[in-house]
Amino acid sequence: MTALTTLTALCPPPTAAPPAPDWSEVENTLGTRLPQDYKQLVTTYGPGQFCDFLTLYQPHAPSEWADLTGPMPARLRTQIEEVRQAARRPWPLPHRPEDLLAMGVTGNGDYLFWVTQPSGAPDHWTIAVNEALRAPWFTYNGTVTEFLVDVLSATVRIPMFPPDLLDGGITFTPAQLHSTAPTTAPRASVSTHAIREWARANGYDLPDRGRIPIEILKAWEQANPQ
Image (cartoon, rainbow, N blue to C red; front, side, top):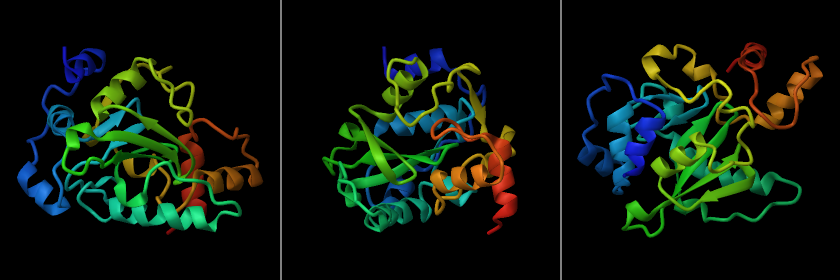
């Protein structure tokens, strides 16, 4: 049984996924081949969110913050080192920034990256997750489809993911039904730590970890317009 078969049994995909991207064109744009499991995953599910929390980047997505072929992956790669050096005590990185290709984001501003080594063997790439480009980092030794299976079946616990992630059930919501998608994740240039500090200063009761409620994200965005 493949990981995709297990995933679709665990979390049924939409009955009608959008047309598959032109993968040759996508890979030419990125300058690299992509893992076969990711291409099958996108073709099966299309754009959307798992458990109203986890969004995979898609080729040519309409929103820049979730566009695999847009500027966001390169921007995040640059910001990793900028954020680290700006810290009072820079933390060690488990992977070189140039080996990281952003491919997902969560509602808390956690980022998912492929560790693109070996560079010529994308089907052997592993997954790295971190919290708003800061420490801690979590490395998963498997494909993104296997990662989703283990996260959604609670086989693997990702430290920066909220403990109540699966309390609402294991779901996939297609993007066209998710009108609030651009506001469910903090803007890439702002850390969740900054949002939590703002929330506490404005009377919100918010723990150090866990999902930031949508109402707080919306209140922060209204108070801090771009």
